[in-house]
Image 1 (tube, helix red, strand yellow):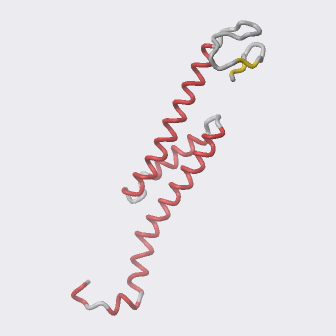
Image 2 (image 1 turned 135 degrees about the horizontal axis):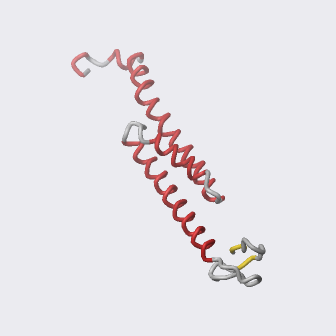
Image 3 (image 1 turned 120 degrees about the vertical axis):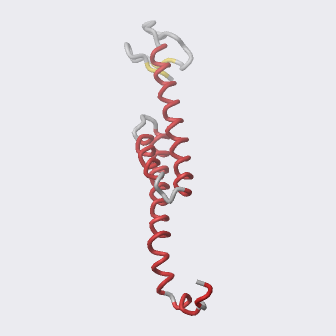
Length: 122
């Protein structure tokens, strides 16, 4: 449903003019379509950057965080949900790579399992 900006009457989405005051609704419909396409582009890009972040040591997840925030800022309840999901998943990817790159090597060097492996395997 589309609301007329002049009189506030609720109109079906497919009409060209308001049924009450006959104001032109084409511009409103075009704005709605452009907002939906921008939302879809941001949403898809955000999810793509989650996957790319997994393969780029988490560096591309920073771009994913920005896209998730931009998705969250859209005037759409689904956009807010997807924005939160994108941001959280990108944070998880970044934390995974921090853990993998910094904590696992330190843990591996301090375990007794590492000491029991013969030198020629290292």
